[in-house]
Length: 429
Image 1 (spheres, rainbow, N blue to C red):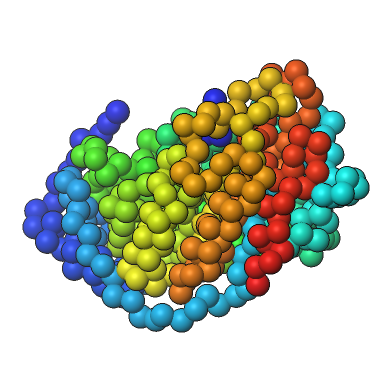
Image 2: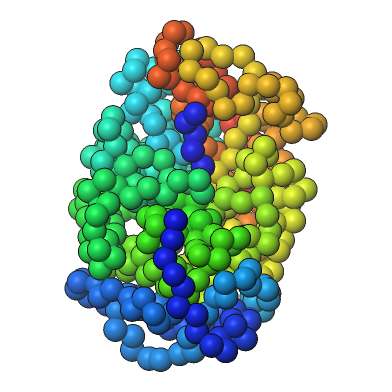
């Protein structure tokens, strides 16, 4: 989702509409995972054939198909109900730390002592940080160089790291998935190779400096695909709910996954979406699985003003867990501690009408909201954890018109002190 304030003809394939339900229902035994064992150029997919083929497959399988109408989702039979395999994630997206610091901001403990922000996080119960990666951002923040430096600081504080590839020069979310400018005119073959090469370069560089990532996210909030229009999908748009488009998206995602694995990384792989519609959520994951994408973790965003109530979140989690039997991470969430402002950059939330019933815009309201979100994740048999988004994005100057749209949802207040919401992470095992 943007935190700042069409189409090709389908080649329809006869009789395949019936196959979709069978393919999805047996997704766990579905198409062969087509990941490259060696770092070689990636052949393009054949546009007329809805088979996910980023490499020459080693075995054949039924061809998945998506109809031009919204597919009827069929639950995937769970193969396990075991609890999450690792410690519960108490996460914090720290992507803009260097921007804040360059603009003169500092981070302080709740008592006002200035410290390195990653040490403050570690001391306040956080065990995981998330860094987004933009290819060539205008300001320079969140690029490869910046992420390498931030990862060193995070690892030095004993934190695990999630790397979040946007495959864009700026924000990528359900409303925009723009290609990096350098990739804009590429053929699909070259674009697919670029995804592999860029992913491989970033992850291998992290490994080389002794800070291997613990988790990698391929695409950011890719409910509607990524790298538009090549990898674009939409549930309610027949032109983008086609075998060709799903094949393209799966090919691009699998190329990113292949690159991570080919570096020798043991990082877990997350695929993240953002939606307040369970039908859209299952439509996406049913199809991405049917088209042969093998990943470890279902990632979802939860922002109350887009995605519903806490009860809705609980319902989404229950359905996703029972349907896919994969661990689930709430990869983004946040809530305001005030409706006031410090800088002159308009905030995303600033009105009483934008609040969730039962949670006021106060320090206690923010704390209670985060506790409720964590409780939902902890209460789900496959709930793996929660990342707080924008907690580092503090305002740095009173009249800054290019400051923070998230200042009143940060986890540091207008005096740059850590807020009480950290107690949720401190008290969560």
